[in-house]
Amino acid sequence: MLLLLTAVSRLGATGLLLLARLFPPFDAATSHLLLRWDALHFVHIARRGYVYEHEWAFLPGIHFVLSLSLLAPTLLSLLIAYDASSTMYRLSLHHLGSPALARLAAILSLLPSSPVTLFLAPYSEPFFTYLSYKGMLYCAESRYFAAAGAFTLAATFRSNGFLLSGFIIWGLLVQPFLQRKPIYPSRTILLSALPFVPFIAHNYAAYLAFCSAADSPQWCARRLPLIYPFVQSHYWNSGFLRYWTLQQLPNFLIAAPPLLAISTFSIHHLRHWIKSPADSGRAFLSASIAPHAIHALFMCAILLFASHTQIVLRLAASTPITYWAAAWLLLEHPKWGRAWVAWSVVWGVLSILLWGAFLPPA
Image 1 (tube, rainbow, N blue to C red):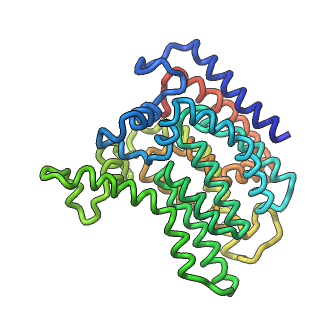
Image 2: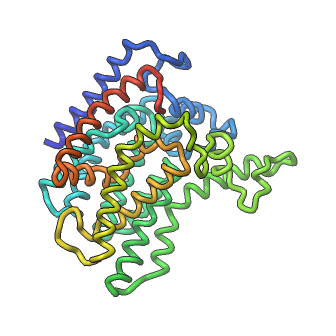
Image 3: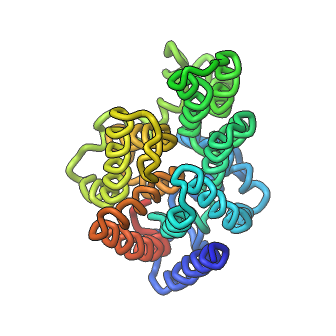
């Protein structure tokens, strides 16, 4: 059934996107239906390399895939679609301990808040989400070398991928410490450092490209000459509370449903876990969910206070706690659970049509 529903979700998104051709695009920058917003930057970098300073805001993973073919990201994301759903099911089964709940969470994951970027467009999201799930599952199975590999690949697609190393630190350091088991610091440091490599290499490549000339940019003289934070601040206006302006209120409103669901469930879980760290045997209060709740809250805090907040619509799918929270709402707070499903369907359809018309949110 999961295979069929996965196929239906992709076919449905494709049909709606084709329907969006009925609406004239607001921006005539391109007539290609899959090329909108950041995808235009991705294609330019794939074809010509990092020509402009502001393009260094994007990690090179998606550009490499695009260099193979314009349709390569779409075709590859379709190829990994079922394995992504299956991995979500297996990960949910491990943490929730119930086949029924695992199926529910996997089905809910087929209703993402940004279907185009996750299913069809040449974006980082399908690869980052898939590799994140894989690494999390490897951590659940105590396969930390494989997890480090998956997380490192994920970090080539999105800069926040290095945060995934927290799952390795939890499994090799925090959890053994709490359970009073042996700890192996050198192994922990080595494996948790690997997801940082793409980010460091990306910034080092920029340093070589910009900072050897006599008229090098101002950021080259900083104590830590990193291009990424400079570009995010200077060109994309990211930074603490910078996004908190009245004109951005609509973006905060459309980001509210996933932010509220994720943070509410995570806080609920962590409050119980802090009081009773031992596994209670209850599905949504399983002790093994704790690192996921911590990671999700950290992600929400960054998105809410220091980023373009509506990015959560694209990024929420990469953390399975989004769909565990949705399942929790459906079973323990049915009214809010039905509201979540209704919002996911309505917003998912609307977002596809807005994408086709080249209208925000990006």
